[in-house]
Image (cartoon, rainbow, N blue to C red):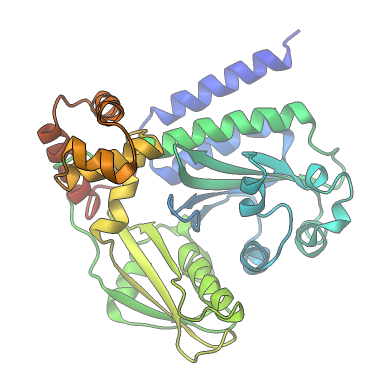
Amino acid sequence: MTSFRDVERRTLGAVAELGRAGLPSEVFFQEIHELLRPVLGFDAGCWHGADPVTGFITSTVSTDLSPEGFDRAVELEVWSDDPTRFHGIRGTGRLADTVHRATGGRPEESVRYRDLLRNFGFADELRMNLDAQGGRWGAAALMRGDDARPYAPREIRLAERVARAVAEALRDAAVIEPGTLTGPAQIPAVLVVGPDGRLVSADPQAQELLAALTEEMTRVRGVPTAVVVVAQRARTNAVAGRPTAPAVARLRGPAGEWLSLHASLLDGRADGRVAVVAQPASPLDVMPLTLMAHRLSAREQEVALHTLRGHSTQEIARTLYLTPATVQDHLKSVFTKTGVRSRRELVALLMAQHMTALGAAPARV
């Protein structure tokens, strides 16, 4: 008889194999979804890509979940204090949690359960943060129907291991090799979203961008997931008394290049229109992604950034309150992880990959 441990081992091996297959990200998510269905026993679900720095959801892939509740799901994720928000789960130090476990077996205490899950015939939901190397690369939600039991502890443990493996595949895909430039869409692009989340208007560049984005990324009334989320963030900032606080997210464009979305309230009100501008990501936006993709620790990323700025070992040591020997140790680790042998090679590699990420080939996992 096959044990659950054997199933777990085979599942993680299959996830790793899919991660090495070089699949487009939406196909990768679909394959993972079907791989996990018989193992975790869910009835429906969705997978999201995210801005690795902010964790804002930027794309959605689902083949078996109705889009009707997505508007409300975004509102709850941004506005509520529900314990099953991705941000809330992350705050507990876990990669995965369920409605039943997060509420101590009282799902009715979750507004997400009351407003969404119960209304769509779901009894429990497993939510995963796809976090690795300091980056928040995505998230997933897997629902069980009314006639199913809640997720068991061992299933949640397996989900955490799967979440880590999927996140590592997404992280590795963020390293874009130089020479793969194909040319991004025509941007900057401007679009306006109304109070109900519908697209009000879009300039010609925005229309081109919307048409170029894959169908899986366009989930709510023709508006990309990232636009819905960043618009909601602008509204949240206004309600919280921070109308000038940034509402920004990074998004992989149709050619795989990194774009930056900036949202602002046109009418100065949280219930008004929101303008969203898509433009090429700045060097400051993209470099953290390049460093995280090389599996550098937080301290190694700091040392690498100072190296890129031309700072000496002594200067880095003074700035980061480290000894010169410790800085050298971190540099050796950075060299090993990036496959270079000197500061000059490190700078050349990172700058080449960095510039490619501003306009590159389609993202593959």
